[in-house]
Length: 151
Image (tube, rainbow, N blue to C red; front, side, top):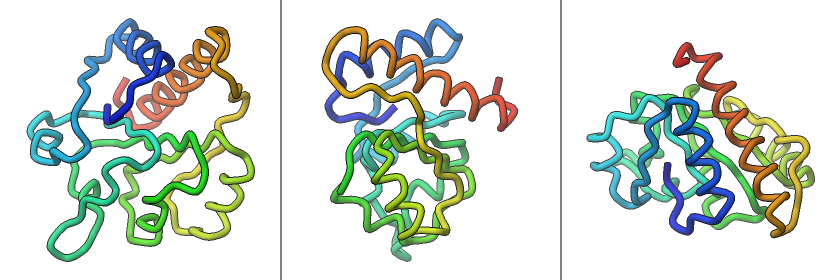
């Protein structure tokens, strides 16, 4: 998982994924070598962290990974959004939590391989909200893993 600012929701997500049998490892978005060396089956990122890393040919570095990827978009108007206009791997699954932003991304970047609105997302900082949201994210990760034959 790549998340430079883990929240209570992220920590709850980590617990849920570990309970489901996944080995969860937090890696710096700026250490692409560590990501590749870790050889993950599935990579989860938040708010397009790491999309600023590019190859010598100016492609998104994540395209070079031999793994499925879940990119969770929690906020709107992200600084790394512009990288979505580049060619993206079909191994990338994007989940957006803001309906208005989901519609904006869908229209602005029709070539995103897989973009889905994460329905039922709860705004707020209460424990019930972040636990609910962690469960939604864990289900999305499990869905991707199942569809891709990883679980």
